[in-house]
Length: 179
Image 1 (cartoon, rainbow, N blue to C red):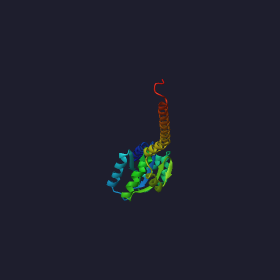
Image 2: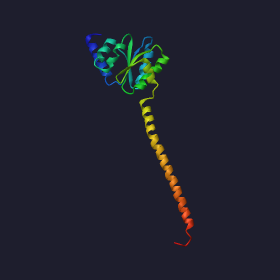
Image 3: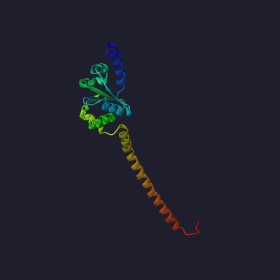
Image 4: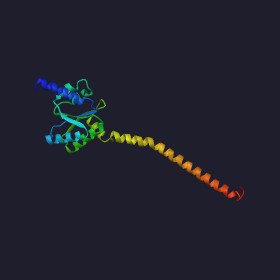
């Protein structure tokens, strides 16, 4: 690769990593091309990507970005998975892939500017997705209001029952024809 090609590759890498929300550095040694392509396909389905990149070019491209924090882990046969949204699906896909293909090694991750260990990536995979967490939060917020509304309706119904009983009682006490 000549200097011009390297410069072009670095520019492409800089565009690729722009706006990422999570990244995971992996060692792909022991995987064949078909296995790597299966992982890429699975990540692409979720609008994420997985690239095998020359280490020196990746370090140059990441200079001045949050991704630079992972430079210590970029050595040997390295590939990087990038997510532009919720980091949980990225961690889930990689963790599931490792279960079937233990040759893939998760070296480290980067979520919201914080470097995380392989164990933390696996732990992240067990969390519910952002959408599920928001739904659970909304349910928790709505629950007290729904319970309060139920108590209020029940109290109002009891009041109406007592009121109807009193009306019936008063109607029985009024002699006929005394209007």
